[in-house]
Image (cartoon, rainbow, N blue to C red; front, side, top):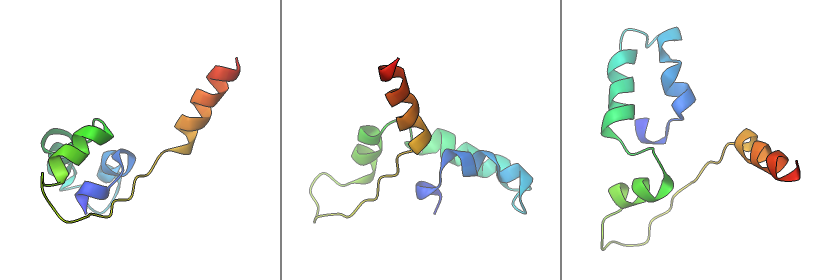
Length: 73
């Protein structure tokens, strides 16, 4: 489940019932998993030779809107 969590959700764990485990979970998410960019994630996640895989990619709308607004300016 941690592989598909959003960074925002992971960083807010200290305000949830998982607050006692937040530091450990955040460390795994930020240091051991690949979340820097999509290509890095795909290379680490998918085997070199494998059957077709289904992946869901989530893009933050606010980021897209901000970039679009900058182009308009």
